[in-house]
Amino acid sequence: MGYLRYVAVGDSQTEGLMDGDEASGYRGWADRLAEKLATAEPGFRYANLAVRGKLAGAIRAGQTDAALALNPDLVTVMAGMNDLIRPGCDADAVAADLDAMIGAFAASGATVVAFTFPDVGTIAPLVARLRPRVMAFNDRIRAMAERHGAVLVDTWGHPVVTDPRIWNPDRIHASPLGHARIAAAVAHALNLPDSDASWSDPLPPLPAVPAWRRAGTELTWAATFLSPWVWRRIRGRSSADGRSAKRPELLPVTLL
Image (tube, rainbow, N blue to C red):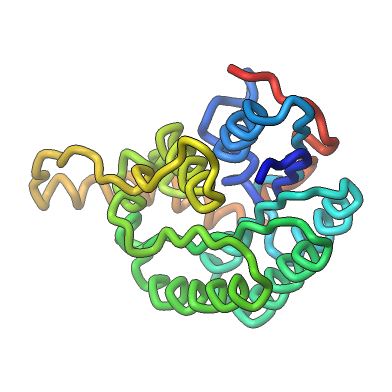
């Protein structure tokens, strides 16, 4: 089926961070998906309500009603990872927020797309302790999708999604290649024309890296990205501070 009104809700991944920059504007997988949808429907419109740094509760409170007011026929919901990586995360509360959003969008008659999360322990070995938490939460997302009839993009178990080339050096945001793969995965899940399962094809093998160099890479990542993130948490700061949605209204899409 064709879609005319697509609304994306979520956090930095859906906003499109690291696929572009602050000066030129971020593109991201949702923009890429919208471009594909727009090629098939001249009247297609797209809004992106996602804001970096937002937790699931804030996404539910700030984006659900705004999205419903746009009367979408397609909604993508990617939320929860910002919660899961925090100490003391209340997974029950996060699941309740995500379930409420998926349920509300499904009840409106829109096609809803939900996502599981990749293996963070492979992407960033220093936070491998989070793997059981993410696995358990993914099970909940699968159950939500089935209960509400949502389309599920299940990334867990596909080796390509933990390939370092799919990720920005911060290992939090997708690289441009990663955003392209996510967009292709959603297109395939929606059975869009000219889509297939090639989004999950592995990339060419990387050369072997000595253990000492891997250890150095992990220490550099911790100093460059993990420590500043921890410091922001200690100070009670968030990348969401002062931010608003980049595309709050349904607008035509400029095709690249």
